[in-house]
Image (cartoon, rainbow, N blue to C red):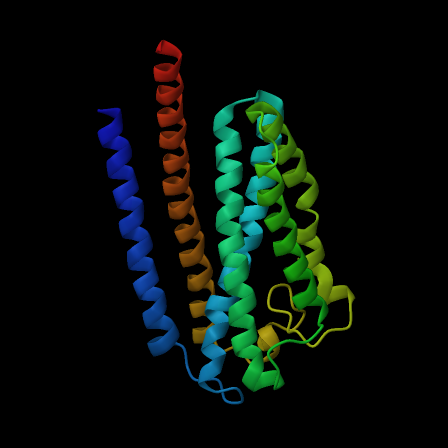
Length: 236
């Protein structure tokens, strides 16, 4: 009964995520107006910022679950932590790539050493190192402790990345927390644009939650299979 309930919950979450994603695509390409200066390429903005948001959210969740592991020593929190970092890596790379595609026609370059671009890249590299270094620790409990501490320390890259465009000279637009609500993101955001932007953030957040549920489930099943394998080998 419990498994059936969990399966139904996963299916419902998947359905909600799929519907939200379809609605978000419709809003981006059909509801939000064309930006007067940048034109159609500005529509990347909705996916770019949402991907960056999920990347940062994932690393914050990894730090929180790292703290939970250190306090409770439960394997489950280590699995959630790793899953969240993996998802954050994917969305962080999407944010960098989509930003480059957006920058090419707007800034006339694929890459510039702008503080936001540099700090975002460093953040992603820090967590890429996290995944690589975990593989070098063979003892499971020691690996989990190392991962938890690393995730807690590494999360400092998230506020640094978020605040980089507020305290350093940059050409990157301030989207969240801008002092001028009529010029969010460096362009005049109409009410329809703002609604589409907020809906995209919601959609990507639900998508993150859905992916996290499935990734943790996969990790739990892999753990169960490994336990069975060890039990069978011990029986010989």
